[in-house]
Length: 491
Image (cartoon, rainbow, N blue to C red; front, top):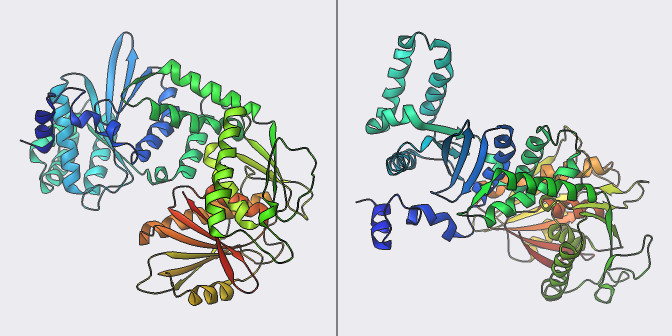
């Protein structure tokens, strides 16, 4: 008896029941299924292009089920989603699960799909062979013997991976969908979703900023509908409502935050935070870590919730003279993945910088990696935009007796006051930084990053907007000489 069968026996539910542990695992699992939620959200625009797409059943029989109807007949596809590279043992386990499900629901499912970022090197010949055989089959549909040797070679590859008993089932019903590494990250997933939704005839004439709010709404709807069928009409309604919100989003919210000064700005504030009592420009005094984390971040989070409850707009016109840590924290609380757009004055530019500006492409991000301590457990990330701060950062860190495993310094192609030429450069820099940071964290399995930022304020806000799903972040403020820790962000 398999583990899943044993769990079903103990739970009192039969193996084919939607109350079995295998079927409700994701519903009870809570967090940790973000990858499959992103997969479903990003594929909905593609499924909606099919006129026969009818329903989405998320966490129904396991991960994802979709139903198509045409001329009164239904076909269903079951998808198992993995957020990692799949090894041979896991692949075999998944296919065996597919076979059991096919037996438990006879003649219900047309195909079973395994979706993941990649397969292990030993499985890739199976994936490519299966794709090659199926791709060629329509061309030789009147000469079935033409592909006999191709099938024979593929079967031999399956036998080498101990899949002998599953060969016929794999040929008839198992499909492999790989190449979804971008879905490990919210920021990349939202870009993929937007591109796919804009290819839909109903939304092809819209601007990017109009359809971006739909991603977070679809993610919320899928998460809230675990184990419940989402009808096509309901999905389309969510998309239309969210895109309508995006049209409203062309209007803006004016937010004032006071740090170094307490003054009035134009236009008047819709919302304001006065933190000026915690700051002093002359001495560069900033709040202690305790005040940042216990008071200021809490106020910022409460403000975000209030704005969400009271307003539909997602464009924030910011006014205030603030510390860089305030900018990064503000961007993190109003992230790009949530559909938030900032519009910020950044002298000497005559125009405000917008965080949804088209990114400069291609962009040459400079990255330098310096070894730290073998016993180090985290990453020190220096972002050098206005100048080279490596010496100051390394001297400060060395003085704390808390050396990281590695130091990483990132910068634009050149450093200086004009190294970021405008909003396009700012967006390109922060997105490139986010991609490189994600790769480093994945390679070294870091859970914490210490960030030292030397750049313009608007760029600090844009940076914060990209810091999603990157673990714990500790920010620092420059105190001539050296630094002091400011706030901690848990992304």
